[in-house]
Length: 200
Length: 192
Image 1 (cartoon, rainbow over the protein chains, first blue to last red):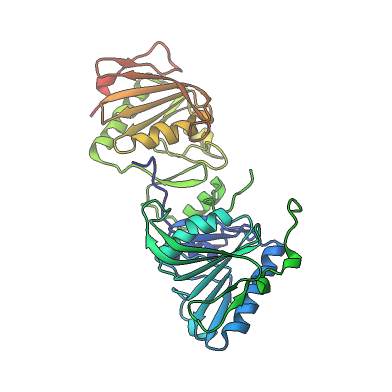
Image 2 (cartoon, one colour; image 1 turned 180 degrees about the horizontal axis):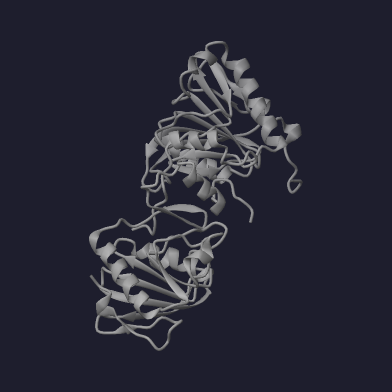
């Protein structure tokens, strides 16, 4: 038996908080599983690589796919995270009436948020059945590819990704939505920018 | 205090009050702010409600002028906490707290039916950290009053503090508020 039950926030209440300006601008938060969670701050490396991922995906996937950066996805009643990059079918105007719910690809760029992106967030994405989840790991300078969501009681929200691949320079990733194209890891994480150990 | 990514966002008391006044948190919702988290509180069952009333009456009888007894009113515990203990004894009078809620009640009482773990470990640790000298739990499950005193540090506790002295009093016994050592309240009078 748990000690206490935290109050669950709904997406609608979360929007209201936004409207009221209750949450300070400089403290990014997102709504996940009814809780307001502190999100990764937007430092220069993070912002640069997010832009890079989006540009590479736009160039590679072509016109039938829409690449969104740090915009909300309506995951469920009590979750509205803002993944760094998502790919959804169609075009920008298709989402005028509501945020997309099931992107075909979600990418998170992680520096301080690695533990959270792998664990709690990964579990939330797996639970929602998002089939293709990449973490661009700025600490270890590699891309982690998560696929095949399965239920697992030991996971934070009862789900996790069964297939996990760590890919470094020289490797390429084939997006599940477009098996005819590939994305080179070094296009997103050039070796010349790899952090020197202890330099940050 | 550094904020860790992936941690649940902590609310301050000011923000919490804003949520209430702007109607984001419905009036009817039973939540309390403990260490920045909005916690769902115990429901008001008949036995819970009666136990609160019995305690408030007993305390009003022994605490005379110079004190007042508040039922389920807010306490300004710290920057991120505003619990609403079932009963609290506060020095002075209600008008003394127009500017802000009282911060250091002389006695705090929680009535526990389904909320025993919350009251003992979570709230207990928060109250100990705030150095509240006298904390009682009316345990409706085991029909006893638990008296907690002497706040001390404990790394294993929820907020690094707990009450070092715990004294269980059964229905045959009596409890004495720390602030009034010459009084006694029969536990039998406090149980529904």
